[in-house]
Length: 318
Image (tube, one colour):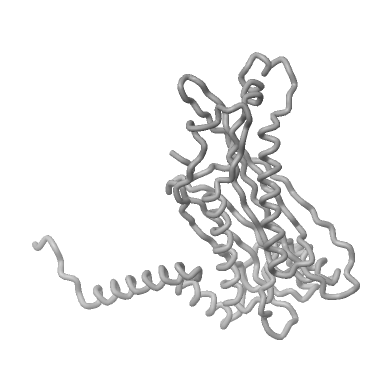
């Protein structure tokens, strides 16, 4: 019996088709687009109509029906992004009297690039099903354990159709719930899209902060750790500044439904018998940019939400 079986013509044709499909998918992803098989599925869904999938609650669906919002399909955009080498102060600095902080720009850029790619693909999926808007967008961010120095950003929402005759040139993406989207429209405002920003800061404590953490005064005296406080302020202001720039770039009157996801990670540094605890601070900010479409809009409330929790930081100097 031969060790190797010759490939039949049918098998060769199937393999070549699979390889061509994979190559086309890679090319589409490199352009920030969708794989061809996803495009075909969504285009077919748009042509056939029929039943739909969504992540809307029963209340959201019922209220949307009253507002003539018809759900079309659940849509998604995702990006798995590798973080390049990122230097940190590590052991070569940080024993000075004054503390300092610096942005880990490669990490920040990776998160921001992954977010833009994910939302860009979400927009493309919505357009393929003929949507006028995407409501209830929620995101998942994580560092992947199975791929070193890699982050994943996933955005999921429900594509809906309104009374408009044709899909708008600018897709209305919003992280507002179905109810809040309905209230926004009734108030005379229109969502322009989801805007966001991420920043990662590395904090090296100064002498007074290190003494407060580990010295004999650590357990006897209340003391603000000013190096860490200052770094949190710096990171937040950088993230909010980038969010504002994105909102202004799309001509927004403001940003509503703002969520602020803040996390910290400790990093122990040992050198020449001395140790200190550095801090990595991460801010992810997300909201819906809006514009006024009438002169009689009701008052809207911006509701920031602060979420605290550990977030792994890939890509740091190893």
